[in-house]
Amino acid sequence: MTRPSVHEQIATLVDDGSWTSWDTTPIDVDTDADYAADLARARAATGLDEAVVTGTATLRGRPIALVACDFRFLGGSIGIAAGERLTEGIRRATTERLPLLAMPTSGGTRMQEGAVAFLQMVRITAAIVDHKAAHLPYLVYLRHPTTGGVFASWGSLGHITLAEPGALVGFLGPRVFEALYGTPFPSDVQTAENLHAHGIIDAVVPVQRLGGMVDRALTVMTQPPAKTAPSTSEPAHPVTMSAWQSVCASRREDRPGVRELLGRAATDVVELNGTGQGEIDTGLVLALARFGDTPCVLLGQDRHGQTADTPLGPGALRQARRGMRLAAELRLPLVTVIDTAGAALSQAAEEGGIAGEIARCIADLVALPVPTISVLLGQGTGGGALALVPADRILAAQNGWLSPLPPEGASAILHLDTAHAETMADKQGIRALDLYENGAVDRIIAELPDAADEPEAFIRRVGATLQYELADLSTVDERSRMTARVRRFDLIGQSRRILAQAG
Image 1 (cartoon, rainbow, N blue to C red):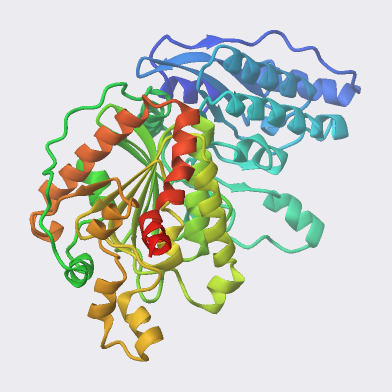
Image 2 (tube, rainbow, N blue to C red):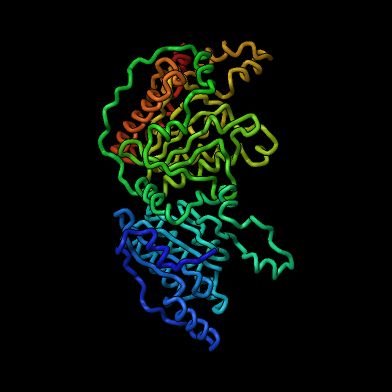
């Protein structure tokens, strides 16, 4: 693979003439003559004074900070001087409150400097931690090749992680592996495409498309929420249907789901991929998006990504928790979309810790410091649905429903058959209207009479309601919002307790 210079890559990405270097002359460490000669040759060959450059530029008119490696300079390796430059560049980005894009390409630690160079990775990582703690975006674009300590530290900490096509990306370089173990490393493992397939990288994009993707992401990540709620034309009295009618409507194959919501009602959508830790589950969509003028992190159960063979598993819930962390770190509102026939019931799910992941999702949502909205868009079965319920505002489509089991399962428990499913649906109070009357749902989004028969109008109605609720929540102070979030669950079913006590 041809390796363009770092400045050629930056020029491809940023606005013409906008690059300003932050770099000062590095102070060389005490070294032997061989290493000094290596440095001199690298400087002469590349025109650079170190393996990394830092600076600021504009991208689509937006100021950003960049830190980047040049592999032509001693393999892009990180020694003390490079570590110093990177750390100072990251800290300056934090001080100036700039979003940061890292573009590593490196073999890792500079072997000529040994352990002290190796420990620079901790210093660089600490600067990244401070940048993210300041609620500032950190994006990573992995270039060919990126291995070793660079990938195992600041190369793997992005809010979003992208990579160039065909890039070799891995922990231990294949040449080192073969030298140590006497056998070649398996082919096609340490590739950007394979890591994307395993949910470690969010997208594989050429540098020519990188600017547009970074711009969309930063539009969501850095735009303040709207402070005024638009009017909503939602009908006040949706058509009343029986619980069983709602269950049947929610199961229609042509019912619109979360992907239609993102495609038709949201803008500046940047879909993310997997947990970032080696798992990917098609049952859950994670994205940055805007509804109207309000940005958010959206995580939603994809009705079409869940099948009998691939039900919603623990990996999907770990993807959801990644979205929750992202929302907290960037101070973005979180929208969850519930639409599931139920979480996986299998040996793999049990051994994958599905019960614990449901519990941790609930706990994370209860404590999440940013505004949260939950949308019961369709089926809401069992723990898989409960995992995404806790929120400041809970909305429900007219034919959305929530139940500890599907009605057939409740019937099997109480009647030892599934013939009483319709009766159980009516008795359990699972439909949106029942949930609204019990205080579990704040607003019902009408279907006129069924979302599957008016998909475009329905999805736009959901989008308009989300836009309204997101803007409205942005005006509520955090303490009041957090108190009300927990209090709402104290009140659910309270009227029944009061009646029981009075009797």
